[in-house]
Amino acid sequence: MAEPRKTPLYAMHIKYGGKVIDFGGWALPVQYGAGIIQEHRTTREKAGLFDVSHMGEFRVTGQDPLGFIQRFTVNDIAKGAIGRCIYSPMCYPTGGVVDDLIVYRLGEKEYLIVVNAANIDKDWAWMSEVLKGFPGTNMVNESATTAELALQGPKAVAILQSLTKTDLLDIKYYHCLDNVTVAGRKTLVSRTGYTGEDGFEVFSAPADAEAIWEAIMAAGKPHGLIPVGLGARDTLRFEACMPLYGQELDAERTPLEAGLGRFVSFDKGDFIGRAALLGQNEKGLERKLVGIEMVGRGIPRHNYRVLDAEGAEDIGYVSTGSYCPSLERNLGLAYVPAAVAEEGRKVCVSIRDKAVEAVIVKVPFYKRQRPTKA
Image (cartoon, rainbow, N blue to C red):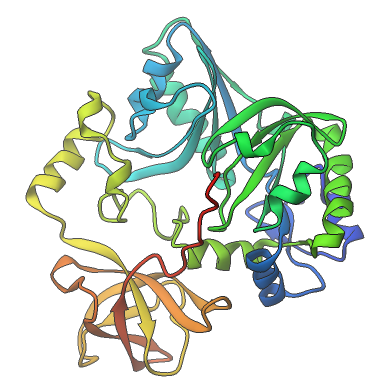
């Protein structure tokens, strides 16, 4: 079996006491000494620093980068001015999801696409096929030559601002700025993240990643900053109901079923999956992603069966479930028939072959107060 790949920040994980595991072929920390719950709460209350260098980055330039990207995304990328970041699912002709990604518009004809680590090869192959219809447009896989850190939490602005002369308050939520000097290194900074908190993602050359990490940790010490692993990254994104590919999204589920209809722009023109999604939209959904809260004791884990209110019949399954440290509740995201997808509806979850009572609740479970200038 092949050894897991190491990110440019592997030495930092060892130095800071990370419990490193094989995560989809990458050696990454599931947690550090503080533990998952403390890392989660510290990110919500102060700040956390994450290594997300395993993510994929594709740069698109040339004759018609916008037309190319519009073809395989369901959101309208044309609405993005330079410096805008736009989230979009990418679909198969069936409407099922290839991946979800973020498109960063860096210039008049220059875009950076950030994709999920586990899907880099699949996404590259899929986009490369689409690219054949756009001669003169170029796509370069920069995943191996890009490091990425995420600084998240209410103290993120104060921490990062101490390391750059650029006014970070000028970078609005889901916007980015290229050629920002952070700790003396050239970076791309975006006001994005996967935690539900305010914060930034910092892209750099791999050789600069350790120095940037150490500078952020030093600047963050007075603010209570700690390094955070994969465990808390998952509970943070789950509380904010941000989808995870392979759980809320995959080839069998559509963005509409996943509650991502606001990211589907039917009026932007043709795109891969449009006909299927339009048909589903007109016909009505057969199943939907909902939030559930346990009434009885137990945690609804991934792939646990969801049963009707009497606990007699299978009606769906849990895509993600966890104890939520910020809310101190046992919650889950689950796919159920659209006919029962209403808040307050009683259901059950099969836990150790026992039907445990639950109720459908509003999502997202957690929503931060947005800063007025962001």
